[in-house]
Image (cartoon, rainbow, N blue to C red; front, side):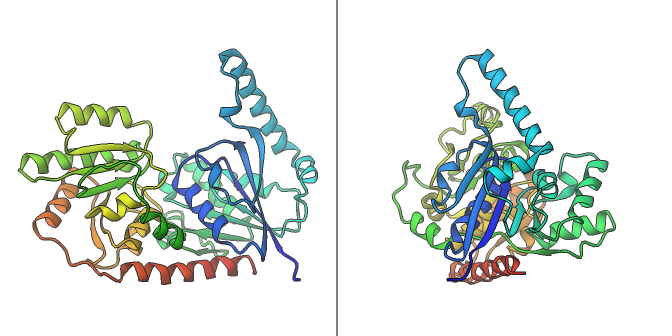
Length: 376
């Protein structure tokens, strides 16, 4: 029997997010007869922990917040000890690597830019080091010097992966660099699993769904714009219902905005749903009003389920919505979003019924590239 290829993936945690969703898809779909996979987290926490395949070994440097005491003073001590433990790992990683048999990994993958330092400082000098980059570096939240440091680190890896050509072009053109060790691999889907879950009975009945949007509730995702665009359409007499699935720090603000405008009957905050696919399949249109994205999986999921897409033209989304039979692209903001929603209500689009099959074929090509990456 051929020797398995040993892969180590690094991420901060498995809290709900697009990056974590992509990581889990890859962990599920890689052939376990060919790969021996370890996932090393900084902290053992997150809603997605129970979604890790049983064949994947999960290690954590520190405990998760759910394992902390309810006593606030003891919790502060535990958090401080956790930070010290991670700092110790960063300074002396070899001890941890030897203890957990990580010195013979063939590939080490920094699945977010927060993990670049840890992979580059790995005591395993024989492994190939690979980075993933998921978004628009201009919106990283770092200073200009911080962005330059990220680019400097990218050049030190053996190989790099950008999830869209847009993301790679932004780095190379904005900072006038050539990342010759990097390529583009679009985010993959677990297509079979999604199609099966879409046929399950939904946990809640939200009634008719004209527009659906899914994501973490924070300002960058543009959900406030969606509420205000929905309000304008209601005021014009359109009989529509919009469903937003997800949770996050903007929930209270959105709830108040909906109540202030008496939209409770037509705009529903459905919270986090472990299986959003029955709702996504049922909806007439999927809306992504984001101000910044990389290559959002949720658009590919909508297309797989033959749900027409209305999305802001940010990040690598134009690489996904390549014709008006798939969706409409528009600039971020309330007015462009309102116009796009109004357009499909007044002139329903012709939808390509073969969209799902196209996504399945493209997905096979994506996984072929991922497998080639781990055989290079």
